[in-house]
Image 1 (cartoon, rainbow, N blue to C red):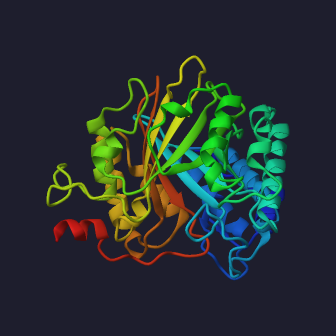
Image 2 (cartoon, rainbow, N blue to C red):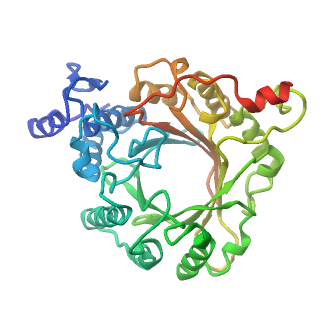
Length: 406
């Protein structure tokens, strides 16, 4: 495998964000926070090693580390011994960065980085403006247009926005150093009571006028996500919140034609949530609910000829239903093997982002997701926390399992 670039300009650029050590090969071997460590240094080191786990070349890894530092802006230089610059909703410890690995059979996983470009802005409105500028700078750099985002700016960026976020940006890191780009927008920007109307209007503007009526019942929409740039079939994705979700209800959420069977969705849910006993459900035969953090569904719309979505994803917040990350990792490995996927890159990825043992905390693995997109093999996605500011201590036995026993 090609080694990470060690040209002097890049190394000086990276060391400006904190000290680090390298092996003779030039690969980063220690990124753990040290005196003088910064948010940018912490995240860049994680990206370098995660790229290796995903099979990306050294030159691509270096390019994506630079991209991350640029996208984070001034907060990249903020020392980690200071509190988070902003109570970011993106992660439990308010780190403005999260990672994910998307697995398919017989292939290396695809690495994604989710970040909040406006983190640290003085207000949510400023956060959104900084985020928009960052995305448009990416569009100029990589030669894609932002028309789909521009058409929705008045809906999602009002003068006095509400809600937990303004704009998040996801980069799908591909060979060649040019990522695919997605943005995540806040339906509650004009008030949570207007979330449904905002999403309905947005889908209509994008040509999916009847799409919202096809979605399953939910508590509320949480995100609207858009693919920007070079995608074969650019998607508009609606994320929905499902409180107290149980396996039978999760099994009925998909609205895609030819999607995963209900039994497959229910089995995934039970395994991810820790309700499996020989694949039969919770210990006393009942299906326990997700009564801490809710489950999420995502429906993707790609063509306007029908109101039906072409993609479905079920997200289970495993971190709130496991005592520690050792349990969460065991469940992830079980799911990957069940779907014919190699779990070795996941183990390597966890070692890339932390030196702690999985049993010493919970939240490193944040979500487990089952993904279906028409015309493509099923995927399992594992979401990995940066843990820049805090490691959640191991939890007592999950309440759902304790209630089932009693």
